[in-house]
Length: 121
Image (cartoon, rainbow, N blue to C red):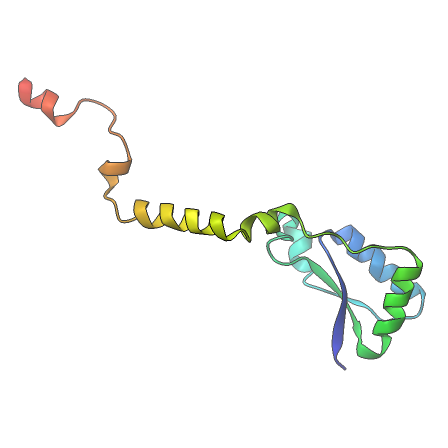
């Protein structure tokens, strides 16, 4: 039996309510990737959310039911759109490429007396 994704939720309570509603109408939904949502909810956006899945035969009925109840899928979080910006990715890559090869004293200012001060003594 192949499962198809009906929707993706970025909230474990919302996904649980959707599964409960679909079960009340006689469908057989399941939650995919809900364990990480229970342990670390702040990782849901980065890991792609929690998908509500159904058998292929029940997919059209579930979509009609969600449309009938005027449920709308969540929008992609702004943080996902922020990281998909190519200019930002290139800028961060340039900073990392320039900073990592530099030796420690070049990019970290010294604290305390310099070697020149000790030579004068």
